[in-house]
Length: 147
Image 1 (cartoon, helix red, strand yellow):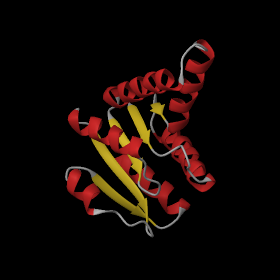
Image 2 (cartoon, helix red, strand yellow):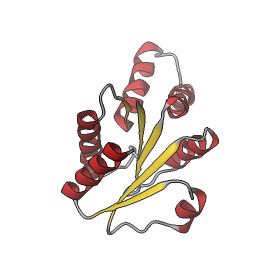
Image 3 (cartoon, rainbow, N blue to C red):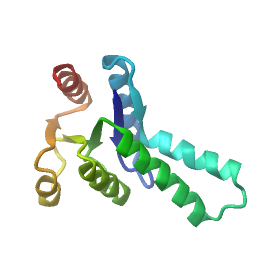
């Protein structure tokens, strides 16, 4: 199974980055033969482009990263998105996911305000609220063990 973990990276809090690590570890634990694309994978690809092509300007680097990112979305079976930290890039990824009829699962912390643009734009998505980190892991496991 191929899962794409959509999420903000630039300007993202340390707490949110730690959540991505928990998603990563939990999904790898519960899904055999998982191919997981995380925000870190996208960022690592960007750094690889910088090393391989020192002649590229920022625009070229960003273009290569976005092309890689959106290919990973199109190749995924499921998009998992934590709504605790939104970003423009995440919105683009989700648009591509809808275009390609990908299963989308939104997770969000109880205190997160989920806007009507999200619920309205993704009527077929699953929305799963969690209370804390432990609850997030339990709900993530429950969802993927039952779907």
